[in-house]
Length: 489
Image (tube, rainbow, N blue to C red; front, side, top):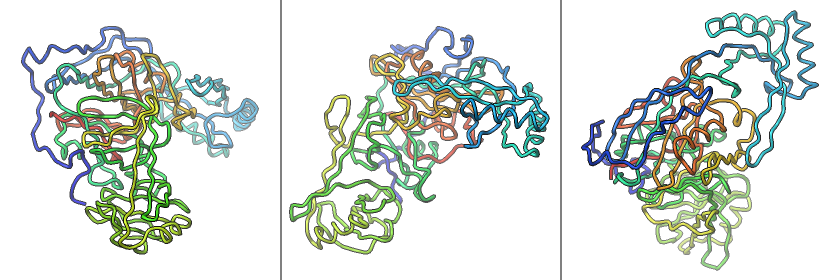
């Protein structure tokens, strides 16, 4: 598809540059904190502020120093780098049989709002300074030759005590002086992944950050599909993961909440059915709705009903074709196909009802053109207090809660201002990233009373005035499913 999936469908071509603003525009109610950096040993950060446009400031923040080194971690039979005490003790014996000395490390993953703490054990061999990584790699090879599965670990990634360093970018958007708007973008289509830089440029955005998780467990050509609610310009393009955190954008307001979506179809004969998904691969016996924004063919092996803007069934076909402009396709396989064959006939009219409900207020959102929604991944701060909802959002593992990764964070302040932050990571000696607890503490420090974690890792990206300002851990910017764009008007 040639048009871009951006609120309003318009590309704003204005060229934006970093400028110094008049004094009147600098009277912001949003201030960068003066207290010590909240992570590690609470060092004083260095920061550089750039006024981007009215109401938007960019902070380049660096804190901490590199003191972490390397160790060799022995993997358990499960393939994880941790296990129970008996399993770990068995691995210690295997390491010693190979002629090396092992240490048994007790690790407590902190409890979060919806998951208790977890105690596990790791087996590690040696400790080397940052400059001696090759020695760790040599020991790892010796252990591998002895039949053990091991990996070389940088201790700054552990999520335990560290001195950093941290490389952070923060955009503060002041509710009192900002005159632009917030939208979501899926790029050229739902199915295709695209960089934040590309989406920001096409949308005329002054700021852009990556959005929520996208589906890496589907066919390669479909991996731009958001995992969770996506609304662009008032149109639901991906269904909710029930209860998952999301950010609701309307004009220049941003609200963090949890959402539920329901989509039903009513045939001309009065029969109703649940639509199981929107713009994603269909599972057995499902009904899935595809919109023109999908950008891929419907699945094969089922039945398609092609529906026009008025709900008229203009065609019935064997599935596996594209969705043409101005049309929707209701696809069914198995029981879903049987329902279509019985209740959706050529030239009949069907009605598709879409509802997006805010689970905090229990009210449905009005699907008007100014509504945009991006799914988050984990709730971090609620009503000014750390409240990490990792289990509800499907991320309550040791790796996700405790270990440090690059993070993209979004928060709102008491007066409705928006804070966007990236914490780069996975770059030993340069920046260590953050775990969930650290990310929550960091957003509270910045003044957020509500905050969520967006997609992170190699997806973390922040673009300001058409320039990528952070350093993605992949070494270059990754294509992602969606982005949050800040428009100048």
